[in-house]
Image 1: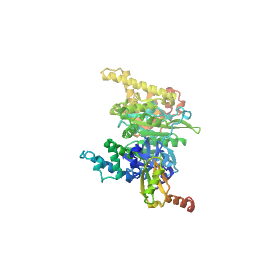
Image 2: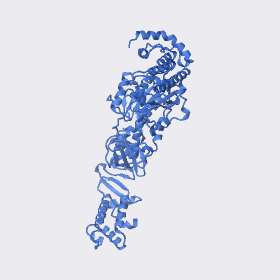
Image 3: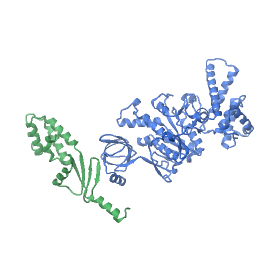
Image 4: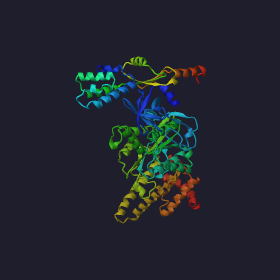
Length: 150
Length: 490
């Protein structure tokens, strides 16, 4: 299944990407049965991303059941685990790509920006919670060094 | 929020509320969650894990509102309640929060797990000490022992709670620690119990755990376990404890509600399959034990409600199987005006007879014979048969026995008083006197008990050999008793 959707993977890394993809899938599904003469790839031209259009064209060339393929696509991406990352800054695309490569399996990254954490990150993945933020480190230092652990 | 952050950084696991329904919350995440573990939400609401599935944990919330998407953290702790000596004379909820408006609970607090394993066989001892209820028909015909589990069963409004509070009063005056657990009881019902115990001046020695029908189902579910944890605390300190669960049939209904909402497979009468285990594990924690070379006990009186005398229902028969007997409150007897409406023939005590002395066994046999004869002869009277003088006297004796067993709610008869009353009847003291005269004299004896002027039988009960010996001892104090009849005006 990964090979089938590989064209879309490089672009669907975050929750926002996933929401966009799901919107594109919904649009395509709504246009499948509208005016059967024109192929779906023509109907969605200009309304979806080029990668998604290319994906639909590939399905048409291979003669696959498009409705079924779109449903499988939706199911697959919705089943991917979500990893929440709280950062002090808005991450750039290169950063997002580097972070997604850290995980052994495909994940959907959900970024939240909170300047109050000062630096570092707060990570929530697979039910686990890790506070690697600078705010937490500073709190610990203040507690131990300045106030003697009280 | 601070407490939540503390536990989040301590356990390093996070979950999210996916959905909730009343007090049941379904949480995703928290991979290391344990059964019965306490969890805390972002808004500070606490709950207990009641079920674990692959992706979702089922949590019973102790109260308050939550939101979908709210974060949840583990505490890493099984539910514990804070127990202390300051609970005497207080009304609390199952988490030991005061409900009586008298401020926080005083005294040093100790945390006790709400669910524990029952004591092992090697710690248990045979039940041999007599447990006085102060209700004559029970003490003479259905005797109980310290450490016994005796089911109190009957229809609604047949006097079960009256009997229970009489037992509380009788035992509190002897140093036993009574704990009354109200399970989904109306506030007015608890108020009645409180006022009765205050009138009898034992409220300051009692602990009341109260839940109302509109409390969160988690609290109602926890009530009996909380009470038992409290009882174990006092037992382990070297005290005898009396615990009353009023009532376990309601508790079973609450557990059924929880299980159905959790979509567990329903069994007989839609109760979950583990309903027997739930109550058996609770009641097994009661008993007579040796702790630090001292014999201590938890005597449990669970209550079960029936409908139209049907004791063959699922929950009543379950409870009968896991207790050491039952006291049956008969609606037919209640409608006849008998108080307490106990049907001694349908009641059972499986270990109470071990606590009886020789003379008490003889008394019980005498009473049973009289009652049986009376019952048989009354059947003949119904058919219109004429009875001989001897049989008429037997019926009258039965009626006189009923006068002794008829005990209003404010009357608590001490053992000495019971022996005097039954001894006088057996010796024939009231044979020639009419029923009204006997009633009057019984009232006077009770009055004398209350005033502390009733003479004591001049021998320890376990040293009284038989009925003849009892008769002989009564003759010694008879002049004092007759003096009481003359001076007391009722």
